[in-house]
Length: 317
Ligand SMILES: [Fe+2]
Image (tube, protein in one colour):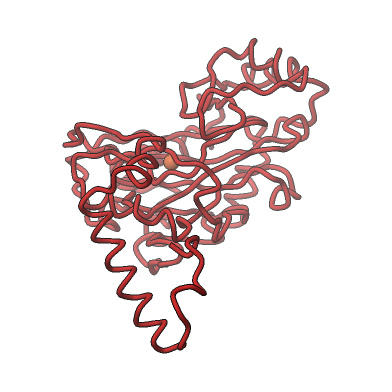
């Protein structure tokens, strides 16, 4: 059955891959101007100004949003209001300073119902699977229209190996949203932490956890409204969010979805503390090999630059 959104599939099919800071697809002006205008002016997306957190939640519930269980978030909205209204933070993850709350829309307007069902449709998800050489029949699909309130934070992580592909489209209703501090960061490890990426890559059974912000450098942010990013998670697909903004004026809003592998071979999931320990106390075989490789590269560079080992700080590792 043709839908009004079929042109989006063609856009995904034709989009080239970008490789910095990792392989992904990035498309600006994803929706047609008419469709995008309709999305961001829908009363379920554009709630208008609220006077306080309580009114905001009443409005969100009234328009069809439900709090969902989401990484880095609490689900008790009363507790969230209590903490946020009094300026307190809640640390539920060691690598984050705060936790947020995420709500997903059960749309009521015909236009958003059609959009929501398109996001979940076989043809849209087949296009994503095809783009990343995945087989949709190996995956489950989960997607929706979501709002992420102030305090939402996920520290850098590449995503679990259970995730086959992911996409996010910015559909922020405020005309100044690109300047707000709530956008997704795309990052790389600092050189001294690159060994973690190699650990994830070479240990098939090890899943990938969140790491501290200080271990990574932000290379770009997805600020542009009506842009989509898609990628298939691997050891290098580091991304993160730290939202600090006024959600009473408007809220970070995304179309968000994932393809999940139906089965996954991972058997353990070392935390950032364990990975750090491995590096500092007991280098594994691959870390040793990696250091040797670094040593050889350094030697070659030093010969060219004619400097001695003493000039090089240990921190260069
Ligand atoms: Fe993620």
